[in-house]
Length: 315
Ligand code: 8YV
Image 1 (tube, protein in one colour):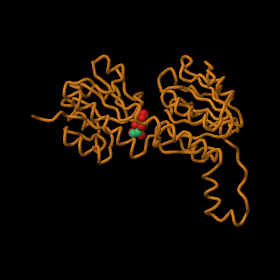
Image 2 (spheres, protein in one colour):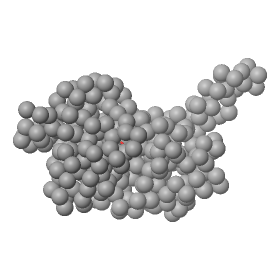
Image 3 (cartoon, protein in one colour):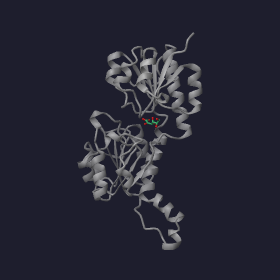
């Protein structure tokens, strides 16, 4: 029996690619010199798209695959998948929630610590001889006992809050409604109010049209000159123009970012700012989590083609 034809939008580690190649007929769009010609050639036979959180599948890609049955996302975020087109055509979508929650939370908290204690600059201070030549490293701001805010208390936001509680922080959050699993933290319905409360503002809300630029001028003004914004969700949740202006003018103190508009080609102005910590969208990037994400993606594809219920459907 011939194997189901799957369009693959980006690379996976060998430990995923080998079993995918064994079970399915994988067509690697990302290796094609002419993506449009490649799609035109294979699109009519494609039954599933295997994609990544940041790559998704847009309407044009979906339209190029008239026999498409499902889209499997390697990532929790499915904002880059055109869900309206999927709904119209009865295409199932799966993602990889839960398995990456802890690692994403870890990196968010690590970014806060790293940036607040200026660890990157401190490393340079040691390596370039400044320590010996100039003496002690400039004093930085503490993390313990300060105020934190979390925009979006879903799975990842909640895990961040649990970690921050371990630092004795005073935690506020916004979401569509108060969460009964967070009785010790302050619910504030408005993101601006959360920013006003915060020294450290975490953006963990799932990206959608409703959350686009949820961190804009008003939130940045409310965060203030001592505040730090940490984004491990999606770039679209932040108005990057406003963020760059706020970082440049000192309206906010600093930022720590794992995601960018147009990544990996981020706005070059970020590279010139010394008050932003830049990470290459790797919050879920541990061997353990990526192995779990790959297995869940494969298990969803396998379940679909075996006529079994999907493990983690999003629609
Ligand atoms: C990426 C992510 O999928 O979970 C998400 O939504 O953005 C990430 O886990 C990961 O970088 C692999 O592409």
